[in-house]
Length: 53
Image (cartoon, rainbow, N blue to C red; front, side, top):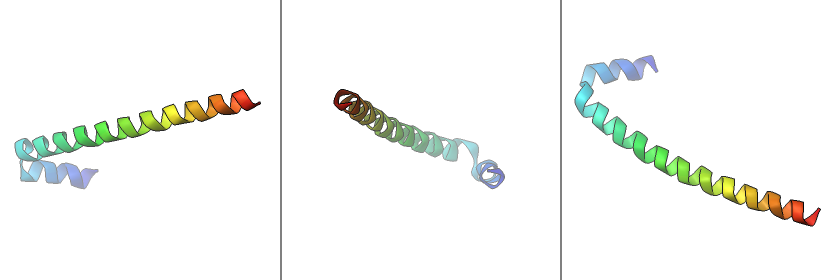
């Protein structure tokens, strides 16, 4: 974390900040859709289990 921060300061805030922001946005979107699907499928499976019990 410290190394990443020193690299961030060293290379230049604007360029790496923009790239980092884009990457984080992309990863966040991907994770959110992934976890949303996972959550929905879990809910679905749980409701099926509840239905069978």
